[in-house]
Length: 314
Image (tube, rainbow, N blue to C red; front, side):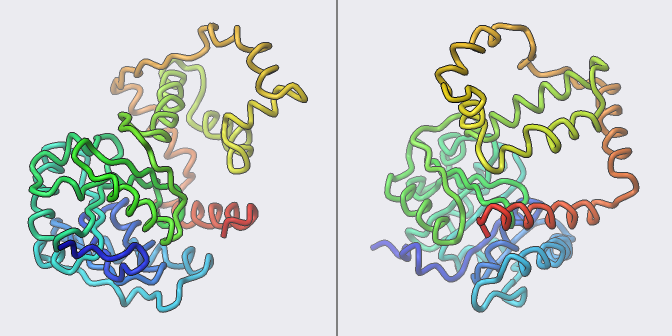
């Protein structure tokens, strides 16, 4: 008999892996009023996690905390099995190493109560690749967030070949009830949806830096003060629909379609030479202008909160 709670009855979320993504999940679930049990194998894992949650809390407080939400609802459990045994839902956020994830998911599966859903934050691997060692692969599913998970609403949910359809549906509903914006994908796609779009932009940016066509600062400014201002309102498809004027997307495609054949972009990966690496790193240091990572995180969070509020999404 399944011990899986209804999506709205989840009370304890277990977060496996407490780095940037896993820690962001911890902060988010705490802010939504859940009890969170976290596990991470790093010797300083608890210290880093609590630093991240403390840094995220002002933005989450500004957005509005759920009833009963508190940092005090966080428990750091050094034993993986003991952590998983308490789960109503598991969110795994280990590093992007396929064999590591395959083994870790199997260990999580072995220690988690029957029927409880196990979700992975993987940003590139399909669940079909990762669930092979699990005794109960039918309850494993991808719940791919965006950084920082405690502020960016989107989660992409997709199962693997052995995942039960009801698990995909359950996970999508759980994330919706937890306040997330959910894309439920019908098919596994390498890199999912949003990452594939980000990757195209990222590759072209690296090519431009490598070729001396643009600096790091110019690339960032071209987005923050250009198309990036439109994207929080409408995505790229509806933005181009408007670019067609009263004729909409039909006019856009008929008029500008031939330009798709122009050799403007290079979607193949740029060679990450030492020179390109140094140019990108140095450019980011210049653009940061002495601001620490913590300073930049706080600035980013204030900006995202303001955008969410301005759009009526918070």
